[in-house]
Length: 111
Length: 112
Image (cartoon, rainbow over all chains, first blue to last red; front, top):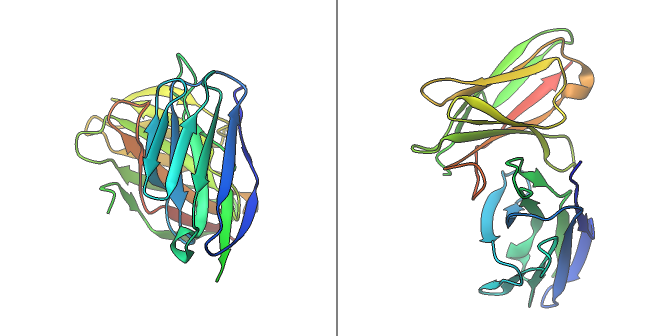
């Protein structure tokens, strides 16, 4: 079955540094979505990418969707303490509706 | 506030019991998803409904069942509960079932 893999599982970042989390699917996705879950909270939608090779930015966050629509990345620049949380990617495969989530990347920030 | 309402927020019950978790989707959303999140784990997809019909199924145990009613609210029934069923159960809704999903606050189930 479809699997969405995310690496790394944990990311410890010094405040002000950049980092990237990666998402890979075994099958082609119809779109890729990114969510953020703060400690003790619920997942909150960040963004959706649909087109092959698409790049979108939200302030310090840059999201990319791979050419083959099987992988994606989230790059955060100048990490702040407000970036703490778990970032999940999720995507339905082509001709399916199941929204499968990766295991998430849990980010901690050292001030 | 996502607009998705889940009740109850917390539930403590004994092994072998049965519980029902309820979800009211955002106004206008036709699709409802159920996820299980164990401690420090990811989101395990259980099941999805669209406009009252089951649309996709994940690794949902036979002891678990769900349905979506004509008013679009959904219920997740968990029976013969085991200690390992203790988890956070999230409901999410979306307009048509492939796009942006809005999550409720979750129901924390503790089986003792």
